[in-house]
Image (tube, rainbow, N blue to C red):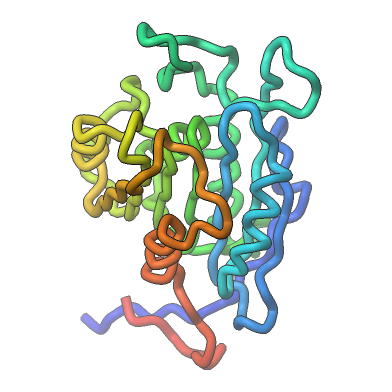
Length: 256
């Protein structure tokens, strides 16, 4: 039986109407000079932030052939001024006094699953036309927790998942078979939530996992843009997993 061939059709940039309620997003187009639009990265901010800062980060990274959407958490943080958002229905604390990783993510989880469905649906059916393996997630803190949960439960295997300081909720069910979504987990070398035990649990659900421990980095805070040592493994991971189509003829076919 001859191999199946698939022509490459460029996906379209998502529009405001593509985001299910109540998700709000900043949309960062791909750098046109880098080649055709091929990939999309979903950015998920940490607790108490908004989509604006991660839209700036996405623009700063200038990932080739990659558009980015920075999603805002659907719920406002209680007792804070406007502009502080979270991914859970409410704030819950664990026995250690820290915000629990096992909060109720139902609204955010449902919204992200619906968004992924739109992103990967064919353009002729009203979707954006991205291949699932070309859709990626980058999450920080609570956003990383949500991203791992969604990647583990997604009916399609995504390209990759990067979590800075976020681990799987204990309530995430183990998939019937390991996901092929590639995972990178980053955390500090002191007071990090990314423990060996948590990493082993992530490895039990995903085929390919990497862990980066930042030296002289207390906690799991996002590295500054100038922190080259911390960003190098993240950018290398992007380089390994973002597909490139520049130089490939538009009428080329893919052998499956």
